[in-house]
Length: 569
Image 1 (spheres, rainbow, N blue to C red):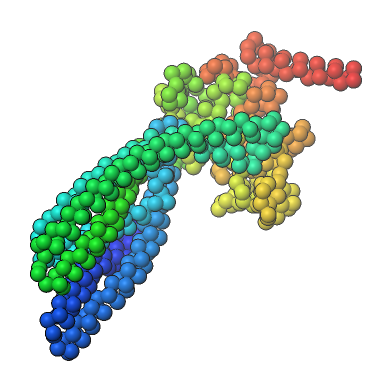
Image 2 (image 1 turned 90 degrees about the horizontal axis):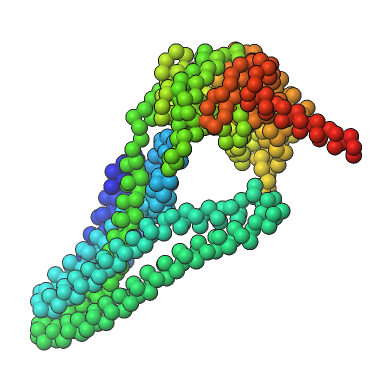
């Protein structure tokens, strides 16, 4: 059970003990109230003296007032548990999700498991609060049943049979509800994705320009309809079952009333107690059955969270950070993504060290970004090794030693300074690269759609991403297409900043698919079909037959063609 993993038990236990005490009192007082009322009626008929009658009425009033007070205190106790347990469930989920290696996030089965667990996060408190509701109703039923036993034993037995029948059927409905929720988990992932795509501000331009909205809305509507149909089908089945149960329950209750009339104590007070107890038992039994059904469903939903929190995290996930001060070497590295039988990287070897600006060039799909993920520690190679400063390195130990600026970088809805440095001090190079952006945006959040926000151009956002990577590493930097959205003048300025960064004794790997971007590098690796097919200085590679010269020739030919077209224009 995931509750065992809760860290702040000291905050939850007092609330739980308080709720448990109130639960028992809440369950006992109704039976005591009914018994006192019936006993008082019997004493009136028997001609009890006034002093005794006043004493009985005082006890009855105390039981009635106590019952109402306990109801209020019970609500307070459950609210306290809801706040603390709900927070604990979300803390455990977030902590576990952040502990999982990036490579596992790419596994579809993990995504489905995380989605199932997330569905119950907002209801994390309900397993305990509903458990207390079930306990409260159970104590109340036992106390009422005990009182009824002393009035009419046969009537009590009939009520027990009725109750057992209803509980069994409702338990089966709870199991079916859980199975339906699990079957719908994959569809809910798609529904959430389509809905977020429809509402994502960043995707708004393409949706409007290309008319994608009706298509995406149709996908969302179809998925939502499938979910609704499944839920409606289950609802109809459960309503049929509930209707049949209610008919059977009414028949058995009628039998209980008849038995009580025939077998209850001969006194009027005994009959009053029996009838009130049966009425109270009927109401509380229905409440108990409903709470038990919900509790069963929540218990099964909680098992999803328990399984998710039990997700295996490799032992090396706790490995200490390994600082890269001199060099990183890849030796015979190969990698294949989950649910794929085609290797993305095959026997890749490369080497880059401080004071060097190394280029990595290749066509789209050559495996450059995957190689980048292995270098920075997001992925672990299936074959081969990564060495840092002459020692073998695990992926998780490199996570804090290599910084990356991706082509599809994150755009946090924070200020420019928070986007770049977060909680770290920056280098002067990173500061100069985005000084104008910081001055222009000030304390405003970056991004459209915010009342206190300001939007940046694509090139400005890319500069923020490069500065972020510079600010978050001491030595090793990887830049994935860092100038793709920049104009030539800004590209030249960014390249100067990168060279200054390298001149400070740092190492930078510059990834690109355009040859012109890596011509100023000290050394260039050329990738094709997941392999390193060439390496050397840029000018040296231009003299060799191979992919690099072909890519250079294609780019020059394109520029000449564009130039001739412009001349004709």
